[in-house]
Length: 118
Image (cartoon, rainbow, N blue to C red):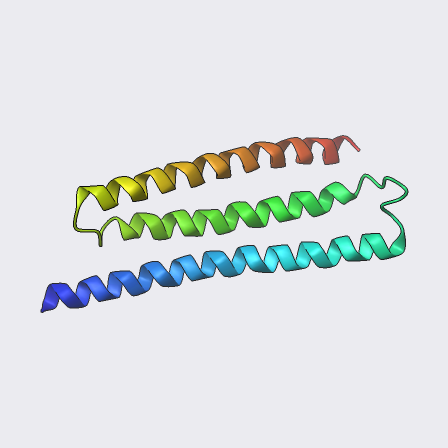
């Protein structure tokens, strides 16, 4: 009975952290869409304004933060899975998300370097 309660608590923690990651990503997407719409309405896109990269930079940072939360939730999920197959699937998901996070981080660093040069 005590193990069952711990399992339920871990599942609730996992789902909560995952939900926070999704909220972070969703809020970043909405904010970036809002910023892009302002750029579009003001006609700055037609002028090839280089500050559009700031939208990409901010969105990338939010995506990486949200992905980190989701990876953390997956790691917690490995403690609640009873068999090796489920642990293997979770490990593959974590690897894919980590590679995606690494790739986004590299692009963010290149955008930051461009911003600092300007």
